[in-house]
Amino acid sequence: MMRTGKILRVAPGYNPNSSSLGVDVAFLLFGSIAVTTLTLVVGSAVRLWRRTPSSRRDGV
Amino acid sequence: MASDPPRFRYERFGGIVALSRPRSVAYLDREYARSIGFHDHPRWRGSAALGDGPLSAPTEVHLVLSRRCSAGCTGCYVGATPDGPALSEIDARAAIDRLAEMGVFHVALGGGEAVDLPYLLDVARHARRRGLVPNLTTSGLPVSDMFAREAAAVFGQINVSVDGLGAEYSRARGYDGFARAERALQLLRARTPHVGVNCVVSRDNADRLGPVVAWARSLRLSEVELLRFKPTGRGAGIFADRDLTPRQARLIYPRALWLGLRHHIRVKLDCSFAPMIFAWRPSRRVADFLGVLGCAGGDVLASIMPDGQWIGCSFGGPSEGHFRDPSVWERGFGAFRDFTTHAPEPCASCEYLALCRGGCRVVAAAAAGDWWQPDPGCPRVQRWKATHPKEPIGSSGPPPNHKLPVVA
Ligand SMILES: C[S@@+](CC[C@H](N)C(=O)[O-])C[C@H]1O[C@@H](n2cnc3c(N)ncnc32)[C@H](O)[C@@H]1O
Ligand code: SF4
Image 1 (cartoon, chains in turn red, yellow):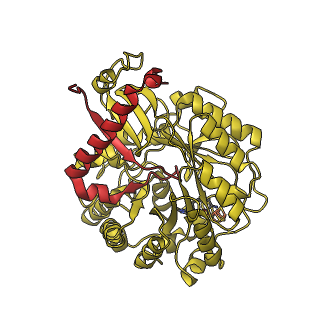
Image 2: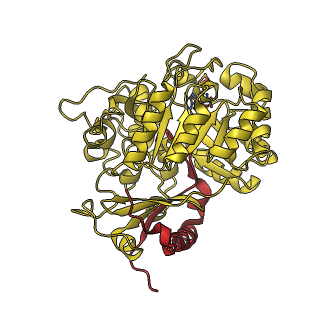
Image 3: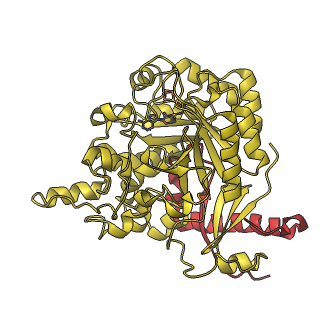
């Protein structure tokens, strides 16, 4: 099925210090390749999740 | 650890989903949210642009469980002491409940030395039960094998603070704790791959980060997070000696890149380094997509202190109100949220302002004596000062009736 809409931002990883938003600098280096890869990977994970019936509960 | 189900929160622009596989927080626009089965929501009124206002809640919160610690690090920004105040277990659990109601995704448990608190693991498990991912920063000094086993089962990521190897550790922290920190890392790494190092970068170690990154890699750790030295708590008195030189500040981004590539390990820079990243003019689109933000206090992140007060960032800012008061998020945090709309030069004309947000407010307050000034460590700000010697750098000025920030 064709997806519409956009993934606007992906912040990878968990951050043990919330006072400091850690950014993995390598992603910045890879620029558009990082954007495309993260969009694909995160998009598939989100779609997979929404396909399972138990995920149909609405968000906060 | 089994992966947690994703969680979704509605936002003005669409929504945010937090995933545990891959570990990430993704911002979706309204169309995307609709296309995966979410319905129109009261928050979907007005502007749908991502940067047009703060989030409905932070994505991550730093719960500063205590100002209690017996290590006595020379530059501790918390100013932790052996008998410093701590949240009670009841309050810590209530704070977690409040964060769960707000839809916060991640909570970083810290202090002080959180591992010394007898209730730490119970509070972390409570966070898991309420759907939050708890993460932890520790000095490692009190970490035992039993703690490592239990912590590995509950925390998403655990970082141990190591600002240098051997004698450099002692120089940075003021005591010889390197062997204990290394042992803690080994114990934790034996139980989980999600273990890393926090390294505070100061004038003393900025040119010698390679050995720390190589050593972290040799322990098979997952990341090294580089934190800029902040002038808060015990750090305030020694900031002038520890602040990076302009050259070190300019080089921190390429150095971090190089070290990550050379040693095949994730190297992260904290948000206060944003001006130093933007000085290299990365693509704005890519930086925005990756959430490379400067001061995101009172927006993407915030802190709750041991007295139960919200604060935009644990490094500083005014107390905004108690976590039990549900109105605080909506009405507070002007000291963090208002900089961009009033930004003085050279921030006002900077193409990265919307992302950088004027750099670190806490550094500006301490080093420039004015919370509302641009971050004096920013290379662009330094160039501007050099080319406009007669013009005092402007202040964005506090909005009327604004409480003065308290830098603890
Ligand atoms: C205050 S400590 C609390 C957790 C634990 N006791 C520890 O030392 O890791 C949290 C993090 O802040 C870092 N830190 C301490 N003082 C700092 C300062 N003045 N500027 C920046 N980071 C600092 C520590 O190295 C640690 O990684
Ligand atoms: S930095 Fe951490 S270990 Fe050091 S005194 Fe502060 S709370 Fe304790």
